[in-house]
Length: 73
Image 1: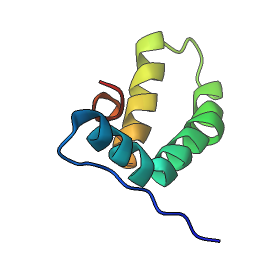
Image 2 (image 1 turned 30 degrees about the vertical axis):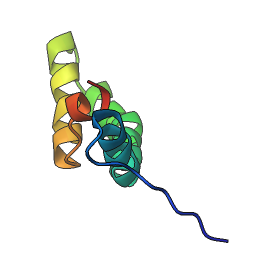
Image 3 (image 1 turned 135 degrees about the horizontal axis):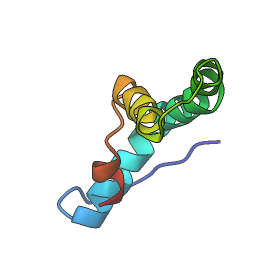
Image 4 (image 1 turned 180 degrees about the vertical axis):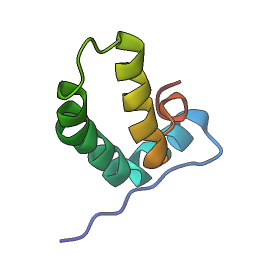
């Protein structure tokens, strides 16, 4: 079975859809990392500040080269 996706990269909405499609693996890996590895790290700390939690999430997204602004906005 084969599938072909076609995008008009001159169209802003299609460009965003294309980026979402080509980064789906990285996004899935980043979310997996956040849900499993980051949780373990944060559980070990006491009095964890909310800003530090968000920083940890953003760090994982950066490691996987995920720019949410490019995927959503």
